[in-house]
Image (tube, rainbow, N blue to C red; front, top):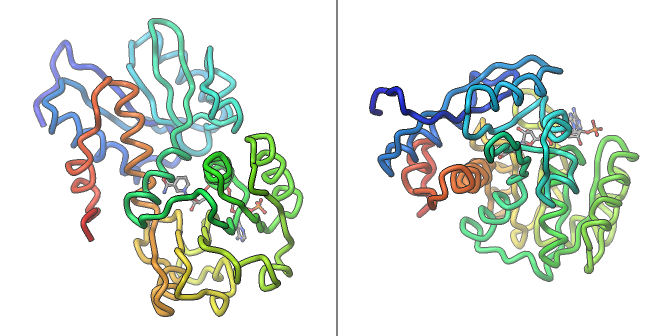
Length: 286
Ligand code: NAP
């Protein structure tokens, strides 16, 4: 990477923790590939300080920020304007600056859909998805899926959060149906057995010894099984899915494509996908 100069433009990510983030590798690879005089750094920002970080963005002339845990909601509140996706989700994962105005975006849903289409060859219209989890990533996926004509069943540890996620899906204009079911109904008719797509949007599988997010005896060869986790690359859920011959997808593609959307918003250039994929060890041909 070229040395920063007096005219280098700056982007970055705010989060806590953030030192493990793959976003600097993704964006700096893209800047280098296109020969752009930009650089991207990680800012460790404590919970509750997102508004300060966004105010600094104006003062310092930072061009764009990615936003990760725990700041996505606070960042939405601190922006001057929100995209329709960010408004609906009440969460921002990307801020772009237009002069002094800060515009909050949410690219998680678009990143997820592109990963699904490119890597799993799955077109959401008419498909039925079971989403395990009802947090920020789950809600982004639910809104994206129902907006593309998929039906969604949500199952989550806290039943009330699942119900709220289903209500959000309905507000997003679900035409094919969106519902919340209890954990005990996952094995019943209409849930996993009838699904085309099974998505883990909980952190279960990140740490050794985590319980499985779902009873894996329910998995079938016909399923596409997605785990939003990308470290480890193969979670016990994906391992079990592969054993029954199901198609599997981890969260690296979603991470890549949501970053590619952000890159385009900031620079106005199409993201160099191959260079970004190589930077995070993703084989898109595989
Ligand atoms: P979040 O907003 O904190 O939501 C976490 C969800 O997981 C909630 O539904 C929560 O249930 C559930 N959960 C947490 N611990 C659990 C446990 N021990 N047992 C059962 N359920 C549990 O988090 P998030 O931002 O949505 O992230 C979820 C996962 O997606 C994480 O692994 C994250 O790394 C990943 N992610 C990946 C990408 C990507 O680009 N690949 C992007 C965003 C997130 P309750 O409602 O009951 O608390």
